[in-house]
Image (cartoon, rainbow, N blue to C red; front, side, top):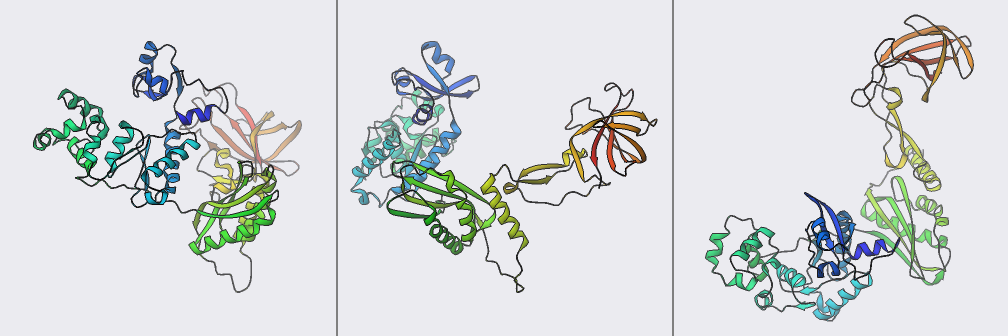
Amino acid sequence: MDRWRAIVQKDRTVPGHDVPVVLATDGTHGPVVHAASAAARARDVHIGARVADAQAIHPDLHVEPADPDGDAAMLDRLALWARRWCPWTARDGAEGIVLDTTGAAHLFGGEAALLRDMADRFAMQGLTARLAMAPTRGAAQAMARHGAAFGICAAGEVEKAIAPLPVGALRLDAETVRLLDRLGLRTVGALGAVPRTALMRRFAGLAADRNPLVLLDRATGRLPDPLNAPADRARRIVRTRLAEPVMDAAPHLAELAARLCTDLSEAGEGARLLRLTVYRIDGDCRSSDVATACASRDPDHLLRLLHGRLDRIDPGFGFDLLTLEALRVEPLDAGQPGLDGARDPDADVSALLDRLTARLGPDRVRWSAWRQSHVPERVERRVPALGAVPADPPDPARERPVRLLDPAEEVRVIYAVPEGPPARFVWRRVEFDVLRREGPERIAPEWWRDRPGTRLRDYYKVEVRDGRRFWIYREGLAQDGRGGAPRWFLHGAFA
């Protein structure tokens, strides 16, 4: 809900905190509630309920579409951001983060001070956080979601701290919680009071992540529950802090590029995507990205690309911090130059593509990509040069013109040879007499791509009186049941 409010308030007015708001996703029997505001939860609107049922009880319920993928991406970013407090963090389900702060709390003045610092920093980002700290992962999860705010559990007090919490705090599924409720086991303390032998017999067939006895032992520390924290992505970033704000970043780019290329060289990597960021004194920042055709750690080349992007960065009233980061890197071995001193033509082409792309934009610099198709105009397509690898064109079975018209232009036939090409036709208001011809080459429709009713083509290579050679085709046959009379088109010209 915090993320939704932060996004919506940029474009329109956000409903007041007294308005019940829910975020909905598609369910089996219609939209279901994915997240609910505090006002909606106060009216007993719970996660997973059908939106239609909730609106029937609360007609003033405000429904907005949810973005689960965006929420998950935000949690992943927050999990990495939370490593400012400890090196082991991971996303905890769809709505939480778990941290292993063993040996780190004293760096912030103790456990209570650490929790206060967490709450303050989350609040600075507009996020509401429920925090708890316990000797085990399961106990901390249970206390954060179902216990008192800022709960801290000391070693040896885990069972006492989680005893009054509902059994759902053990992260049990809904079916197991309903079963325990029918058995009269509504709290963790009541579950722990049941003889273990009875629990083992009753839940022996359940998997470990659904078994109440296993989850209870993990929460109390009888079974290990280690945190599998994802590896921190290595960041290739260099910074320059300035003593006073400046307006021009150009004098500082050479040093940034040299330092970044040194780091890349030591790691055996090359940059494919760079981001230059300036941090303005008004608290805002501006960034500009530069992509390369192939991995590079040449500081002079990267510096030329960065200079072409400076005019797109608004410095505001000045900035006092610059960063240059390699967002995407690839392995790059050290190259051995030739003894003859000749330049590498592939490197020259890559450098040219980089400069053109930095100046004109990635969508304006394109080259050809090829695919298998019988239809001539489908063989070649244009793709951004930085996003594709050049390849040799396919070898056609017959000669093809050096230039294709896209789309093919219709010609007016004055006289046609029976079952053959036109002897005279008009193209672009000019009349041509056919002296020689070759063909036909029949190309049938591609049934897996073309619409039903698409007509076949008969291609001819013709030579006109002034020596020019054209590639023309007849679309359809007389009485083929797919339209009227056949039509003629000029599709290309030979050298």
